[in-house]
Length: 594
Image 1 (cartoon, helix red, strand yellow):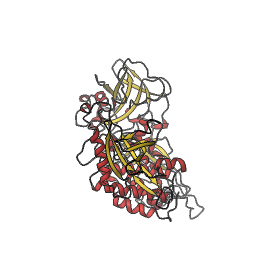
Image 2 (image 1 turned 120 degrees about the vertical axis):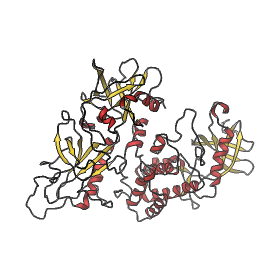
Image 3 (image 1 turned 90 degrees about the vertical axis):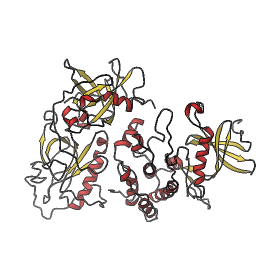
Image 4 (image 1 turned 180 degrees about the vertical axis):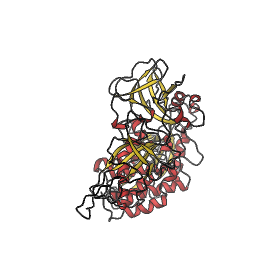
């Protein structure tokens, strides 16, 4: 109790700890001068001396208070009254609202919120962010626990929406880096460009708002995974499924905010209009939405030559649509407004069964429908992922395949052009997780030729931009298979053998048992140097070493594809963790240091 009765700055008597967040604990306190209740936030400052960290403790509190105070007249920003210093620590005095809880607590108690309520909350939070952006203030930590829901003046619970915690926000041209050089923010809500070391911008706040609204309407974050590293990789690489409980307008906003590239995110003005419309009681919650050879590896100290059989390069630049990259066949409609999640079954006009000699059309040339797991080679004619290719099926292990069918979308009858966008949406959803583990994936959706009463299933094929697969992908691999950098991804575990010529063979093994290496993540080797001129292990150490190669006993390795594919533009490096003494890592998923 002694702690709770502490008096701050000779005026604010601490009564009860309310919680913590944004870099400090928040207390219910009594303003003994005015005899009113207030909330007082204790700023958590570094234990090192200011000279060592470059951090002015009092200045840090004043900066946060100043930023929030600039918005004190905004109805959706918590009001700041004062900033004081006590015992060398800054404290911020704010309005206290009884009955307030944060959005995360509301979802935990009530479950996923109705779409119209989420839209109302989103509109209010967006208004607060836009007000800050208008003053050049970037919040940098938008998340459910920083959106407060308070009773309105009539006492109705959760009706007032307030954005709080400007503790790590930035003014224009202000720079903030932790002593360890880590990105500041909350994992799971950080935009991909922030995770990659980019600057905080207005667009990064919008991405975080998108994750927050997704969580509110679905009850789970779109990038929530079992481990921290998996969650971060998902935020970087995975296209989330559209929220099932949101109507078309709310879903358009959420998916628009979650675009991987900042320039592709929905403009805030358009998002605000859609949120206002979705907040109307006519919104129907729960309606689905349809928004649009062995690689070489090198540690930091050495280099090895690849032994992977050379494969013909796929063509030049792919036509990419969306974060994972898509190429749609000529038969796929561009209609973006359909709300179906799979093709409709349409009855044939007569009982006569029709099936073309070439079920996907004469250009494709196949005489049988494709099944999931089959591998193919493709001739794109013009050298790009445009239109329809001529396809032939090949052996996934022996023929160095260029692509693989990873899923199919069955149809009970002809697939009209109006439903082909729904097929594409289904393929996007079915392949999202696998694409998140790949470097430069291209999804090609192959739909049946028209006029067939019993058409084959549409095929969801994955290719690589500027490289061949060389083998099966994902769940089509088996433990004991030889794998390549093009068929491996973060989270995979392998055993490695080196022959007398210095060539390596990677074998896929279960992570639950001892293994030689565990794959961590991708990086891009910039520049135009040859494969032999790049120390891939050093690059991996620079990007992942602080988190994964945790000092004594561990080292980073970098795997790349063949020299020919490297020279052709596939300059992706897959980084892994191994033991320095050559012994095996223990079973179980590795955990990062931070």
